[in-house]
Amino acid sequence: MEPTRNGTCQLVAVCIALTACCCCLSAAQLLALPSKDLDELGAQYLPAGFGQANLTMADLQRILQQKCQEAIAERPASETNATKLSEDLQLGASRLGECIADLANITVVLDEVEKARPRGDLDVVFEKYCLRMPQARACLSEFNDALLPCLTREERQHNSMVQRIIGKLLDFVCYKNGDQIALFIAEQGPECLEQHKDHVSSCFQKTFGHYIPSQINVTLTDLPELVLGPRQCAELHEFEGCVVRHLETCSNITPSNIVESMFRYVRKESNCQQVIDRVTRERSEALGLRSSAATVKSATIALLLGLAVITV
Image (tube, rainbow, N blue to C red; front, side, top):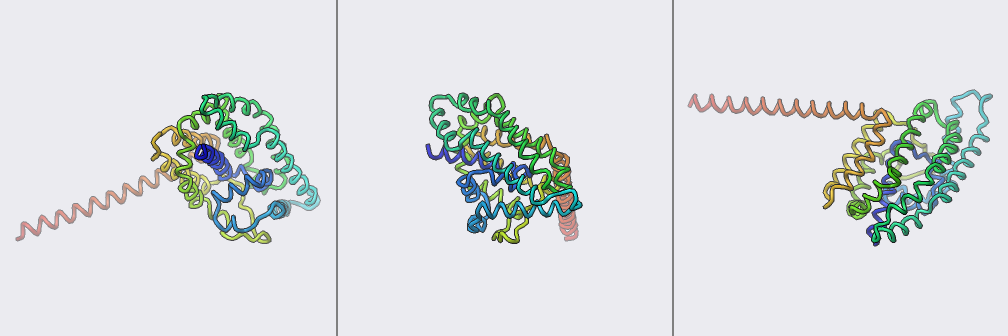
């Protein structure tokens, strides 16, 4: 059962990674995660220096407060109370953590999944937790209200799209009371992810690792802007292609199809599809030009060789 459990953890981590890549998961939301889950996520998906930095929750709080202060600096001092906003945000993160803990304990959920899988009762497990989704949405909305004052102008402009993406990911997880996730588990999806966990980690680090310093200095570290612009869209597309390409090599194609569908849910609620279409078109045109150049070169060589034979 261990590969199944690990693989299911991998799916949770990929969902979190995808959400983070789309700027839905801020440092404040990381503060809401239990420290054990945070350590496991960092160990599997973040650069080695991060895991060796001995980053504490107090350090994350300081980094978050620094970001809040920088965002507030854009506005007139009379309009903001930096101390109160930082306190409100930390309180919001704490409440979100309590909400997550009340709604689902990841260890308990995984145990229930392991017991239900042989009996074919996965739908019963997911239905129980999906019925709690309205509460989860309410908790996320409350936290977002506390987060907004600590975002830069550009981040606030992206926030409504970010919230739509969060909503779509939640919809995906609980489509028909978790039908997609139950199918993923039933079709050896956890085993497939466990088999390729190192590849998924490599995909993440190649595309998004540059946002995280290889060695973290908590007094100097700046959080990246929580936006989903053209650069992030292109990186998301690269991450998707890399992950799906590895999962397609599993004996069952269903897991890769489900993971790819999860990425599509994100695309539909963002402006990324336009960027992806442009990048794909430009690459196709570049390949076409290279192919044409190679054809012309080959034809030229053939012509010269023909002339040489005729001359002889």
